[in-house]
Amino acid sequence: MGRIDALVFTGGIGENAADIRCLSCKDLTQIGIEVDNRMNNAGRNGIFEIQSAKSAVTILVVPSNEELEIAEQTVERIKAGS
Image 1: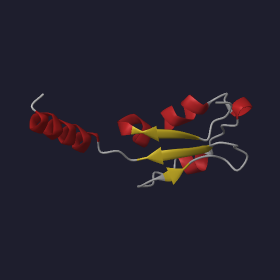
Image 2: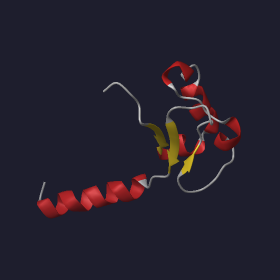
Image 3: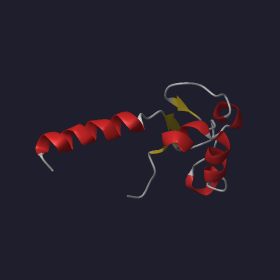
Image 4: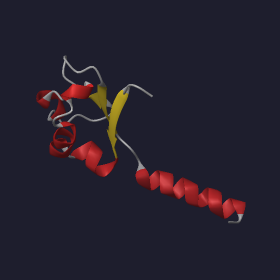
């Protein structure tokens, strides 16, 4: 593929653990990934970016609703008879 367009953190840990996001990106500046610690620790809701101005890669935090997804897939399986 040759490049990274975006790095996305989601799910319980990806959404809520700023320290894990920071550690996950540590030492990745050579591939264009650099976190802005202020933005990472801001604790906002919804979709937000946490990359520094020098980062070549967009780093997103995206909320998920895992319980809803599980419920919807369960209903689909029941309706399909599988």
